Length: 296
Image (cartoon, rainbow, N blue to C red; front, side, top):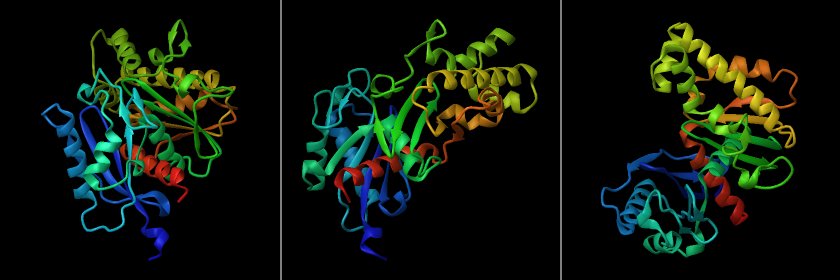
């Protein structure tokens, strides 16, 4: 095995309830078996950092020459310096230099521990090793409770420029008398179902009923697909992507809404694809980002 294949880093995906970790190898951004752990019940920065170190040590056990770590983190976060400014979630990290603290536990330099936004990590994962591999202009949407988004040009995340909303975040862009998230998220599906059936259901349940042939549920997903197609055509005209990747929880029900979305996009220049890496996309993307920054 060549030295290039052996190059690897620890990658983390930090969520609101749990953390995933893996080794990411430079060759193909392949992930070693992924491990997960719940956030510690003791809500202190020390407990959180110890959990990260323990999870990483477990992942890298028996592997020599791990070059560092990259963490996909939600914001607000100072990604360049590794300092958390989150107050609404993980408030115990507020003002903590996670880079220095975690590097110290591993015996690394702080510069070996890097960070990126979790939505950007998802995008880079699909660009580096997933549904948009080798594609020049890509937009990625994660459809769920909210709408995450990321824009990439030639393998690099962009947060400004023609057709790119501020920070690359499209969820709060004004649209149809509200914002984008009102039309293509969990609450849009739930609202449409309640209007038809007079009751509330989780999206997974609506999908189950749609698969079973319930007309109302089938109509809800068809309407969602139509609204998604219209929104993508309008919102992405100026950026002019080659591929749009759809991920997130709602994408698991793509068979229920993708035909309607593609019908609305007939004649559009870009291709609509479903994410290939799923929950592992941010981990692969973290590896892509670390190696790119290191010039490795």
